[in-house]
Amino acid sequence: MPRTPLDLRLSVDHLSILDSDGNLDTALEPDIAAGDLKRMYRTMVLGRRLDERMVRLQRQGRIGTFAPIKGQEASQIGAVATLRREDWMVPSFRETAAMLWRGWPIEQLLAFFAGRLEGGRPAPDQRDLPITIPVATQLPHAVGLAYAAQYRGDDAVVMAFFGDGATSEGDFHEAMNFAGVWHVPVVLVCQNNQWAISVPIKKQTHSRTLAQKALAYGFPGIQVDGNDVLAVYAASREAVLRAQAGEGPTLIECVTYRLGVHTTADDPTKYRSEAEVREWERKDPLTRFGAYLEKKTLLEPGLEEELDAEIARAVAVFESLPPADPLTMFEHAYGELPAHLRAQRQEVGERLARTAPDPPAAGEPLPPPPMRGQRKTSRWSN
Image (cartoon, rainbow, N blue to C red; front, side):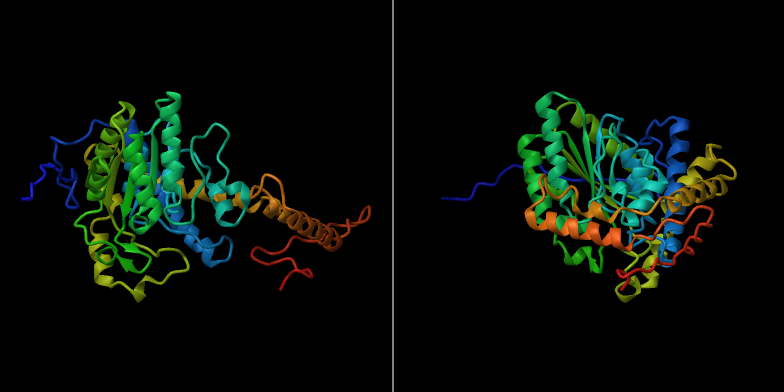
């Protein structure tokens, strides 16, 4: 039998509206209100300034390891700005700017990276999932949320963020398959920052783009300049409207770059060149968007100083939190604790009670608090 070619008519577009030299394609420029443009830029700058402050906090031992976002602000804000409050946002572990846009308090994000349970808890009326550390495991959850919304007749859209490394995981492909089969209202935003820790994109896939992976699962994919917030917004807005209209999922590949470390436990000088970093610094999304707003006379003077003060106040709130209760480590893993964990919880509680300092006698001054960064000593401190 002769072979019969299939007319699939499949293609992937690349979208860029505002290039790194400031050239604007006015025919593609999205219609965004001035107030929204200012808020988008403000949140991008806040994300960058907070990122820089968190690196210093981590180096001082005041928070734990975290994943900086420097260079990826446009990919996050351009996408999340298209959501309504009633839509769902599903982050991975590098969505600080998107979470700020969605209303997460800075001090709560700091608490999360200090290992505190309450740091990852969304507000009761907040349609966001907590930060997800294991790569790609949030994607089946996002598709499940979208399926639930579709089943209940809710017009909510689910937007999930992930990196290029996630596309090498089975969870990504399972989520893509179910999203296509169920035709659910989900927007999958891949921040292709070129490196999955030390593994470059060319060693992860032989595909020319990541966006084309959507075609195998029966729905559209588009590649955008991920450092162009206008292009990310335009593509995301179209995908959200498609989802709301019952037209199913979309995969958006944002081609961007991680200008800093993968996490604060990483040394990127071991696997990439300074020349490569400098080339991507020339495409910085903040510089590009700032020049665009300057031409529109929408830049706010003194913005960085204002945001630095806001961050400083949040750090003070975070560092004034009372000590965390170690017994919370036993919560939320089981509906009913197994016997061996109940026994362990009781033992930990008894040890904490024995090592707790005696309260001061009447009229006796309180002991001074430990210096910042200094640990309280006990029989546990080893």
